[in-house]
Length: 222
Image 1 (cartoon, rainbow, N blue to C red):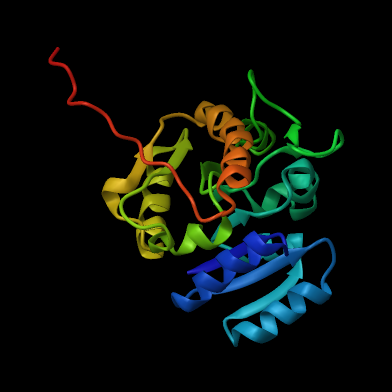
Image 2: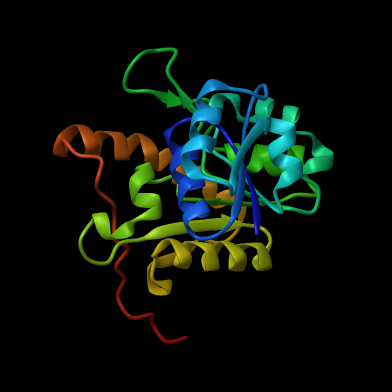
């Protein structure tokens, strides 16, 4: 399958590299083709890896992954072009972090809206699924870095699109039982806000290699 990965940061490089290792063709997109980081990533990942602009990557991908900084995601997707996103699965792993007030960051949007929902409204013909934004990039593609069973969330308005994402997550190594469907894309309000707590976990434990496990009692009858 062909993937377009928008964003040249650690998340984009990690996801793109994993996808190449699984046999997919991946084009990494930046603001302009020839981005130094993207070129180096493509050279390091072999013939199935390439680079270009945001529009180039989005056009290339049958599936597009938004791995840009959340505060710049809407601008990046506009550069990618609505025509290159229409009808496609758009996996949003970004968090709308606001560093304007220093550390720890706040959110650029929250409570009554989310970045995931903003993206879906801006590109109604795309099939947006929010996932993987509640953990470190290494853990996204190698869940065994945290021992035992732990949870990855998916949220979106298109059931079939979430099914495709679940299949991809399993290819990354996530057991089906650890993939929790939170329902509609509105749930992105919660997963994006959770990242501010995750940052506190990191500060308190001294490691990014951490995650949560959702444990519930048996459902009550009726």
